[in-house]
Each structure stands twice: as C-alpha cells, then as structure tokens.
Length: 139
Image (cartoon, rainbow, N blue to C red; front, side, top):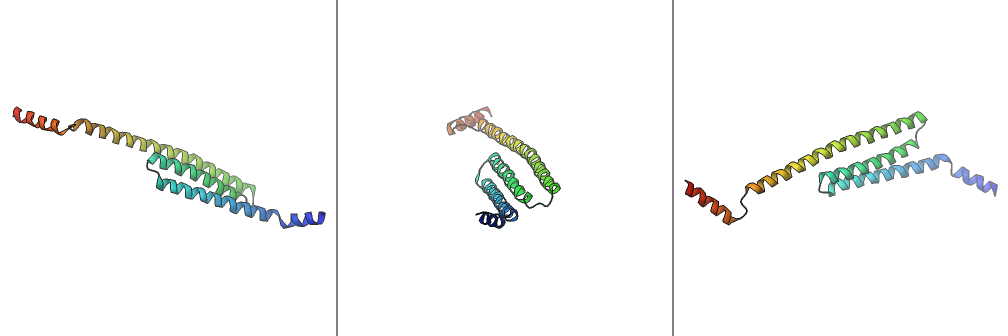
C-alpha cells in the first residue's frame, strides 16, 4: 500500500500540478478577457461598456497573473507580478472613473441640448401657422 502511495505521489509531482493549474488560471483569465470584449460590443451606453470592460479585464488579468506566478522561479518575480497587477488595478480604476465622468457629462449636455430644442420648436402645426400669421400681421 505504501509503495502505491509513493508511486502516486511521484506521478503527481509539483511540477505537473503547477503547470496544470497555470494553464487553467491563464485559460480562465482569457475567458474573462473575451467576456469583457463581448460586453463592450453588446452594451449600448458608454457607462455600461466601461463597467463590463473594467470588471472583466481586472478579473482576467488577476487570473493570468496567478497562472504566471505559479511558473515563477523566485519570490522576487512573484512580488513583481503582484506589484504589476496592483498598479494596473489602480490605474484602471482612475482611468475608468475619468472616462465615466466625461461620458456622463456628455450625456447630460446632449440631454440639455435636446430639451432646449424641444422648448424652441413649435408643439403642433396649428401653433406654427398661428405664429407665422402673427408675424405677417406685425409686418
């Protein structure tokens, strides 16, 4: 029984397990990247697109970094990967906030312009005829 156990341990050594988990994590990360891209293509609003992209890309990068960390040779390299992931998370949060804020401002400006056009335009054809007749009488 112990010989069978040792043979099983030798067959499932750490290198094989780490390579399998690495491929699994990188594949899951790729799926999240694809899901984010599909979200960008399918959603209508700029804010919805931005939300889908940032959430999926942050998770995708996290899984890819986790998969790459399993293949790292030293702890210094693992620390570099974690620092890169942290910097990308912070920069993605800042950039997505700025982009979302600008998209919201542009949507508000468009809505205000449409409201102004509605107020300036006559509401019905009878109103437009009456306003032209009053303009003709004034001349």
